[in-house]
Every structure is written in C-alpha cells, then in structure tokens.
Length: 140
Image (tube, rainbow, N blue to C red):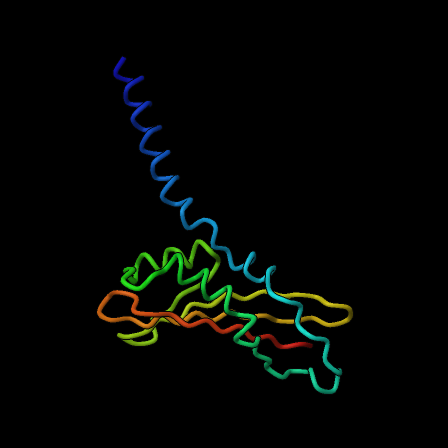
C-alpha cells in the first residue's frame, strides 16, 4: 500500500512539474526561425561574408513571443532556463545584462546561410527589466 501511495504521489509531482515546463515549452528558436520570412537572395558579389540583419518589423512577432514567456520581473535564472530550453546559450555580459545566442545553418539554392539570434536581457538586480532581439545572417 505504501508503494502504491508513493508511486501515485511521484506521478502527481511529475505531472505537475511537466505542466510548469510545458508553459514555456512552446518557445523554440527553431520554430521562431521557421516562422521568419525567407532571407532575400542577394547578388553573389554582394552577399559573400557580409552580416545582414533581419528588419525589425520581421522580428516583431518573435520579440513579442519572447516577452510573453520572459516578462519584466522574471528572475535571471528563470530567463536563462527558458532560453536554454528554447535552444540558446547564455553568457553574462556585465552586472546589468546577459547575452543569449542561438545559431543555425540554412541552405537556399546554392547558398548556405549562418543564422544567429541574439537576445539581450537587460537586468535590474537579478531580474529582467526588458529584452531586445536581433537576428543576423551571413551568406556563403
């Protein structure tokens, strides 16, 4: 009987933890990348090894999605965990900011694009005050 109760309790605890994780499981940089418009094909003499930035208007839905799961007041540790589950790697820049990046490779016709997402967490103390998002790509 004790084993049954212990297993039932463990199952409830595991299900509860799963529900908490599922709340931010929807955030995935791979999915955000998939939702981005295709990067324009540039003339080969213009595109080689030049860092191109995605227009802010194209980034607005991704920035809104990030702000939805990491609202102002979120702890640094929680924000890092959310971004790590989404596929990013975070590094502290200084006491007031942290930079998290996600990298991907895309192929388009004969081109290969190295894509990088940069999320900057602006911190006040150990809490997120705001965040900014940038996406750039280099064609080779």
